[in-house]
Length: 138
Length: 152
Image (cartoon, rainbow over all chains, first blue to last red):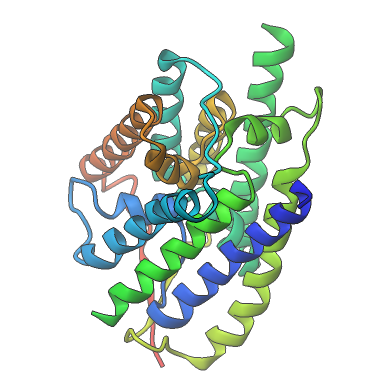
C-alpha cells in the first residue's frame, strides 16, 4: 500500500482512538498529558487508565510484529548525546506548553482551540528551523 | 474497571495508527520537517486523517453532555495564549526536530527494545519531572493549567 494512504489510514485510527477515549472516558488523547500525570511531584489521582493506555500503545507494535512480521518501528537517526538532549527538551517543552502533537495537534485543533493552534504553529516552526539548521547550516 | 478496558483498547488503536503511518520512524518525521531538503509529506496525511475523524467525532460526542463510562468530560479550561504555552511549544519543537520523536511515537518505539529509545524516553520523563517540580515551586507565578470539569 502507498505510504501516503497508510499515513491517512493511520491518522484516521489515531482519530478513532481520540474519539473513543472522549466518548467512553471523557479524556483528551494527549500522550504527554497522559504520561505526565503519572510523574512526581503530585501524580494525578487516576493512574489506572493512564497506565492502561500506555500498555495499549506498547501492545500495538508487538501485535503488528506477531501478525505481519514487521513492527514498523524505525531506527533512531541521531546518537545518544543528541537523543538525551532532545528527549529532555521534548519532555520539558510539552510539560511547560501543556501538550504535544496529539493533545494540541489532533485533539486541540479538532476542538478549534486557538490556544492549541498557536502551540502547533509554534512547535512546527521551531522543529522546521531546528532541522534546517542541523541539516543545511551546521 | 471498564474505564481501564476502554483506555487499553484506545491506547492500542492509537499505537496502531502511529505504527501504520510511519510516525514511529524518526527519519520520516524529520523528512516532513526538512522543508529545504527532500520533503516528505507523510506527516501531513497523518494530521489530516486524525483531525478529520476527531473533528467530526467530537462534534457528535461533546454535545451529549457526559461520557458513557465516566462522570464528566475533562477538557482543558485554559484559553490564554501565554508565555509558558509558546515557550514550551518552542522548546518541544527544537527537541522534536533534533531527534524526530514526539512523546507518542517515542513511547510506542520502546517496544522495539532499542536502548537508544529508552535513553530518549528517560530523558523525556526527566524533562517532564523537572518542569512539574519547577511548577510546584513557582506555583504562585506559574499555576498549573486547571482542568474544567464539565458535567451534564
